[in-house]
Length: 434
Ligand SMILES: Cc1cc2nc3c(=O)[nH]c(=O)nc-3n(C[C@H](O)[C@H](O)[C@H](O)COP(=O)(O)OP(=O)(O)OC[C@H]3O[C@@H](n4cnc5c(N)ncnc54)[C@H](O)[C@@H]3O)c2cc1C
Image (cartoon, rainbow, N blue to C red; front, side, top):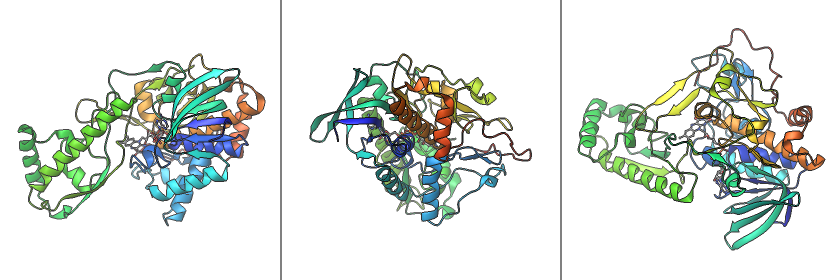
């Protein structure tokens, strides 16, 4: 790690990768700090390699660096690359299935090719703005090290950097539950008696040996987990997962849930050899905190498809709130041809300067957040944050003061779809799936 950077990005998930690549490609001397050993965040370490949605209503609504990395992963692994037509048929899910290992390796390369310095196994310990630049202490394996930056970008998902910098967060009393991804095998799903399994699981739940949410977040039915081989199946309460203490609680509880499930299934006919091949190294967190921004995306604006005057990207996903207490989901698809946008001011902590946020902790109310937190909008926000940071370094202007046309020009140069560019939504298209 060097003593001085133009831009420091903290958090190498979907938003942080595109932020750092964009800043680097635009000529800013950039460092990316990531606490884990791998890029991708929830998309790789959390096992959610299913980015949604680059396409809507027959159009590509998110492009740029995120799309380039996902497209290259699909090409590299021999998967078909979808076209906008992909989103025209309401019956087709438009989450893309991706190889997370190849994606992470491609991201390493993209960052290094953009001359970004990459620091894994590190977290910031403090962030102070003084004399027109940020001073940052970073906790590394060998102790605290100091660096500085003209602009900071918080892509931790939890707004950890914003907290260190002393700005307010919004922490809801109730947050969506988390999920521990895994892969299970050792059985033939076609040969299982699911009625008998449902009856047995009800008995085990009544006896206190199993929790309903250990085996299902939908309806308490073990069939989805077994047919899906463990993918995105459980609900784990995660009330304080923006702190190390809260993360510790949720990781421990998630492994207990897997163990309860394992013991239960191994006692059932046809599942005697049930095994858990792997669990993700980190529980996937849906919601922790958002910043108190200079603007907040409300669900009303989101569902109306408001084109903000400072919109930096599109987003497309239904309201998708997993219920905190037990099973189920509050889901509302978007109305026909609605295309929400995300404004720059929602990426700027109130009262801050030269500090940007991208990803799921962007300023938004709970319902709007449940929709715009998905991977493609996070990538698009990240690229916009990287572009604004690079322009801030070049001009000395705070991101809030940058002319929108300059931001758009840089984003278009790097392949992004800019809000307002989509004017000809196909009247036949019916792409609100999810
Ligand atoms: C169970 C589940 C299912 C989902 N399903 C889908 C789906 O099907 N499709 C979809 O598109 N989206 C889905 N999502 C949502 C989506 O995956 C996430 O909301 C999105 O990836 C968030 O991106 P992000 O970049 O904001 O944060 P993250 O991906 O969480 O990245 C944050 C990064 O910052 C790092 N970090 C955190 N704190 C620090 C720190 N203090 N210092 C240094 N580094 C730090 C983390 O290690 C991580 O790499 C799902 C989420 C979950 C949990």
